[in-house]
Amino acid sequence: NTAGTATFANLTSNGYITGASISTTGTISAPAQITGGSIVSNSSVTANTITSNSTITTIAFTATGTTALTSTNATTTATSGALQVTGGISTAANLYVAGASWYNNLSVLSSNAATSTTSGAAVITGGAGIGGNLYVGAAASINNLLVTSTNATTSSSTGAAVVVGGIATQANLYVAGASWHNNLSVFSSNAATSSTSGALVVAGGVGIGGNLYVGAAAS
Image (cartoon, rainbow, N blue to C red):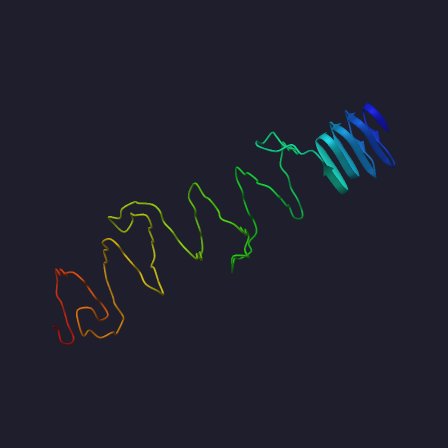
C-alpha cells in the first residue's frame, strides 16, 4: 500500500495491491484486488478486481471478477476515451454499449435467421443510415420502401430501382410515367360495360403494331 508512486520489476501480493500510481517492468498480480491511479505493466495485470481512476497500461490483463474504469473521458477517435485498446478485443459473452459506437468494418458472424423485426443476427431498434451500397443475399421484408433516386429508366437495367427477377404485388401498382413490357398479361375477369370498366382500362389511346384479337364483342 503506497500513497505515492511505486515501481517494481514484478509485483505480486497474496491479498490486494493499492497505490496512487503502480508501475512495473514486469507483471502485477494479486488474487483479491488491484486499485490505483495509473496502473502500468510491461507484461500483464491479473486480479479478481482491477480498479483505476486514471489509466491502465499493459499488454494483457485478467480480472476474474470486475474491472472498473471510472474515467469519464469521451471517445471521438481510435486513440481517445476511457479505454484504449491498440489491438483487438474478444468477448465470450455480451457487449453492451450505452452510447454511440463507430466501426471501420463490422462483421456479424451469427447465422441466426430473421423472421421478424426483433430476430436475426443483427437487430436494430431504430433506423439505419447507409451511405454506400446495401447487398441482401436472401429475402427482405420492408414495411415501407422509398426510393428517392431520380435516375431515369431507358432499359431493363437502368433506373432508380432495378429488379433482375420478377415483382409480385398484392395491392395496387401506380406508375406516373411511361412503362414498357415485353409481355403484359391481365388475369382479371372483370367484364367491360363502358370505357371506364373492365380488366384493363386505358384513359388515352392504344397504339398496336401487331395483331389484336378480341374474343367477345368490341364497341
